[in-house]
Amino acid sequence: MQYHSPSSFNEAVAISNSSSGLVKYLAGGTDVLVQLKIGTKSPDHLIDIKNIPGVREISLRDDGGYTIGAAVSGAQLTDHKELSKKWPGLVEGMELVGSAQIQSRATLVGNLCNGSPAADSVPGMIAAGASVSILNSSGTKDVLVEDIPSGPGSTSLKNGELITAINLPKRNDYEGDAYLRFIPRTEMDIAVVGCAVNLSLENGFITTAKVVLGAVGPKVMLAHSAADCLVGTKLDDNILSRFSAKCSQIAKPISDKRGSAEFRKDIIGVIAQRAARKAYDRALGKY
Ligand SMILES: Cc1cc2nc3c(=O)[nH]c(=O)nc-3n(C[C@H](O)[C@H](O)[C@H](O)COP(=O)(O)OP(=O)(O)OC[C@H]3O[C@@H](n4cnc5c(N)ncnc54)[C@H](O)[C@@H]3O)c2cc1C
Image 1 (tube, helix red, strand yellow):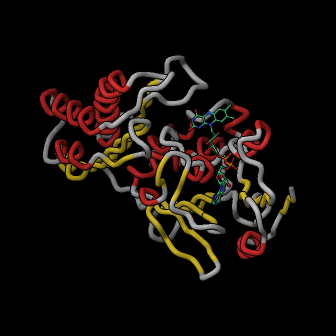
Image 2 (tube, protein in one colour):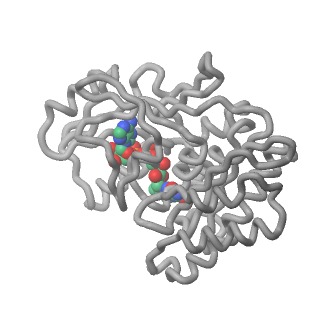
């Protein structure tokens, strides 16, 4: 295996395109290096992106949104007070990834590109309407995060395509997001189900809603009809129980050692309801 440490994104893509065999980008390495060690993936080329200038920076754009570099760690996100205040749901999804050691390395981009339907930070990014900047040999393009996962362990990225950053839209007043997951123990486990909700309010009424379900299908999924239940309401108990039932109905989970399909369908409704309530309270500025 050859290790590369390019000093620009263009160089990274050029190395990828001129290399044969299995080529992997390396961000935090908390998936790639584990896969390499246990032998499930043996890259011929490992392209470390961490030494590219700007790749570990979080910046506020002129349009009021944030750009998060591809190698920004979970710990950096948590430490960024302004970003954590504006997008608490997105940040709390990433905070759930692993332990303190993992947090110091793991990235949003790596979590997305690993392609797990149970990835904890992906529902929050999709609910936020985030996009990724992708570089390939023809240039750059912006793609919504929701269009990246394509199935268990796979993404829509083509060979050699490199995500350079994640772009979050501007946050307005009376907007709030939340991510919750269910795991059988208190930490260091993979989501049995997960749900992110992002809401905008006007005079207490929900004007827009995005609901994203994790670990209940072959990829993280937008629950459009569940989100529609919330729009135009003030989230009373009747609405919440209708919303909960809708999320359970949309979920298409499998049974595995972490939980049966039946259990997952049931518990996603409970978790989604709690996430919606939390996002709503945050939009009202309660915490
Ligand atoms: C002990 C432990 C606990 C964990 N707990 C959780 C958990 O609770 N929840 C959870 O969701 N995950 C968990 N994970 C998985 C992992 O930590 C996350 O998926 C993490 O966010 C991956 O980020 P990374 O930067 O380390 O990715 P890497 O390992 O560097 O890369 C992951 C994938 O993304 C690709 N990639 C990296 N950067 C780019 C780029 N810029 N452009 C295109 N492709 C790229 C790589 O080639 C690779 O295929 C855990 C892992 C460990 C070891």
